[in-house]
Amino acid sequence: QVQLQESGPGLVKPSQTLSLTCTVSGGSIGSDSPFWSWIRQHPGKGLEWIGYIYYSGITYYNPSLKSRLTISVDTSRNQFSLNLSSVTAADTAVYYCARGDNSGYYFGYWGEGTLVTVSS
Amino acid sequence: QSALTQPASVSGSPGQSITISCTGTSSDIGGYKYVSWYQQKPGKAPRVMIYEVSNRPSGVSNRFSGSKSGNTASLTISGLQAEDEADYYCSSYTSFSTFYVFGSGTTVTVL
Image (tube, rainbow over all chains, first blue to last red; front, side):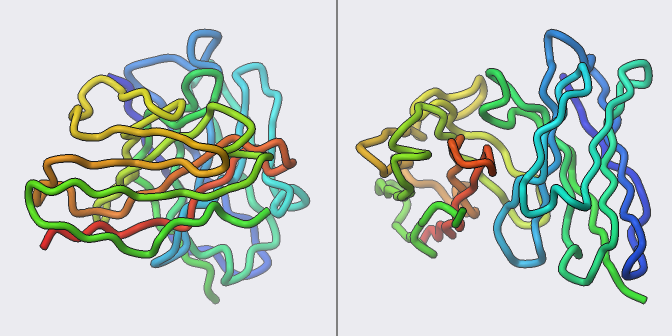
């Protein structure tokens, strides 16, 4: 059974960079499971797709975040990461990592999510 | 691009059937078969219930079914049970640069 686990600071100061890592177990980041994604949910709100990374390192970003966003992958560690720069209170959210299935067109496995609060 | 439009809430009695609608455009729901539905219970991660309009992943009850007509997708829950109380989100691939868009979410209440 594939499992995903997010890790990283729960509190980030405004203007700093939010960094999270997703560790995958029970499966491998590779050609059989190539699409991996970050999704966030603002408190009490709906879901927002952040971006995708293909196992080769190709990325697809939500245009609204693209200028501040970097998603990277480390297949040797079975991890992928999110860096979001110049954060504000509007970036406070629960951040989920997920596996994209069927060529990435739906999210079949999700991490439990981690709350990141942006505050001084 | 705006989120897909869902009713804020839907309710039903145990045993009844309910349907949640999800309205988009020809650039997302109407143009592709890549519509999926997610169930989210409080404090938990979303769980996929339907993918590619009408397919159920292994382990999902056959009480859940999906369909699409034009720019609107629908999720039907038949034989409603207390455990079905949750928020439900639709999503779709979109030809806009956002690539992937979610619905606004619907809270299902079992009376």
